[in-house]
Every structure is written in structure tokens, then in C-alpha cells.
Length: 253
Image (cartoon, helix red, strand yellow):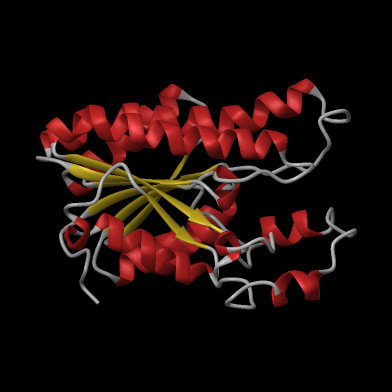
């Protein structure tokens, strides 16, 4: 514990799932956290449980420039600086290309890709003022490979992977590191809701094909994100960090 002592972090999509796990784990590691979401009741409950000294919630639609400005200002005004950004917010919808409405495709790109880009853009000024920082963009194994029915989601996660590398090139001069994290199957509500759309797959066979034959607990991803937020990863930027139980190691996926 204490890996993030003295750090101030902004985490998106923190009201549930992986984002909620990141918020809790960062606080446990000593960070002070501003986190946002559009699920205000859930976000407020998470913040109340963790305490205002360490954690504060703000309403945050990641597609809104003004919401981004307000969230960054809340970090600086509330805790004095901004050292870490975790671009975690995301949406997933399953549909074939033939069946997916254009509006759904655009919404996924807006939240997952444009929201991530806006976050990086917003973080530059306060992180530079703080002497540098770390941006962690949550992508997916779908940022490496595609699956039928996930064209929009995969497009957004490939985009995050590419933006991460471009941002690392641009922002290194300011002491800002930028990396992407690529989880495989994680036990979150969003994943479980999506799983119902893959009824044609043999779940047991899928798990048996993996070197680590189970899905991840959210905190297992949070530990990796905390490493990238910490000074322990001070020479890592522009890189992909995969936590997928070995799914991408062979032909089983």
C-alpha cells in the first residue's frame, strides 16, 4: 500500500464496474481521487463510502468538453494538482454491421474514442503545471483483434491504442507518459450484460482454451492501472499492457 501516495487522479466511468474498482484501489494506495460518471446516484454512494478527504464525485459526460473542463478544475481546486488520468469510461453494444444503426456506431465512437481524446487534451495543461503525469487509456483485447458483432467497439478500442501512441510522442516533452491497458474478460455488469448476446459460443470451451481459465476480477486490472499511474513505471510510455489471462497468446480466441 502507498504506491500512489501524494498523487491526484481523475478517473472516468467510476460509478460501477472496473471504474469503481479503480477508484477504490487508488484510494487504498494513497491517491486522492476525483471521479466522474453519468450514474449520479451510484457515483455519490461510492464517494460517500470512501470519504471526501480522499475521494470526490462529479457528474461527467466524457463526450462533453465543458464536463471535462469542470472535472479537471475539480481536481486542481479540490486537491491542488492533477497527476494521473484514467480514461476508463466506455460503452459496449453488440450488433452485426448489417443490423447496427449508424447512431449506435457513432455513440460508441463518441464515448469510447472521442471521450478518451478529450480527456488527454484536457489533462495536458494541469499535468504540465504539475511537472508531468501519467495517462492510462483503457482499451481492450478488441484493440488487437476483432470479433463478429463488435465492429463499433473494436473500432473504438483500436482507436484508443493508436491515440495512445501518438499522445506519448507528443506529450513526453512535458513529462507526461501515456499507456494503454487491454483487458480480456472481466467480471463486470457491462460484460455480463454483453455475454447474453454471445449465446452461440460455448463458454466452457472458451475458458478451457485460455492459459488462465477464468475471467478477471476487476481489481486485477486495477492493480495494473495503479502500476502505470505510479512512479514504478517511470520509463514506460506509448506501450500496450495486456491483462487477458492469455487469450491473445494462441488461436483459441
